[in-house]
Length: 199
Image (cartoon, rainbow, N blue to C red; front, side, top):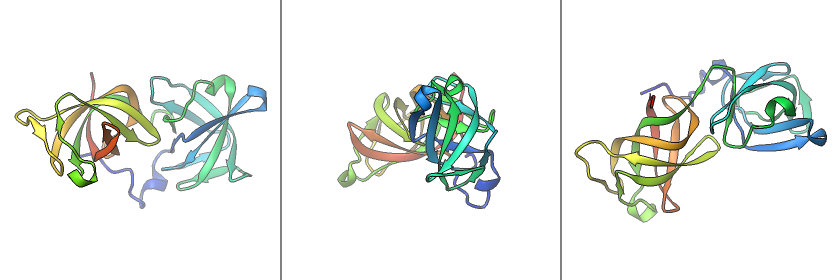
């Protein structure tokens, strides 16, 4: 299993990463603000950040950092901020992507994961190979298909298994990334990415 991204003793030392929660056009469309909570690392005015996930990418220069209405030159782990980027570089950015230090994280649509289903009274229900689920990671929600391990026909509520997931679109992912999933619109279980697969 890959290293967790939620270890407080190293989050500040890792490369910058911020899931995008919302997007706001500014200055008659000449700039765009991307808001979110910084999950790891630091970002400075003048840094270049990369858009990762949801089938689009590219890099942009951070021209301003807004921290609850105050302009700052640097922001770090745990801060809720707005990063202002030039629209010409960032016009295709959207909620559900992450902004990250260039080259520090890739987008993937296929992975293996250790999952656990909720108890039946909490919404857990049977999952079979081919089940269409909605997966939630960072600020993204994506449809995907789950494949159970060979020899396992059905995973019952409270069940655990190592499964393969194929998302409809690539998402910024690393080993150790936790996620949740829903089945027929109801919370069904959670998991942790164990291995990224190239397809």
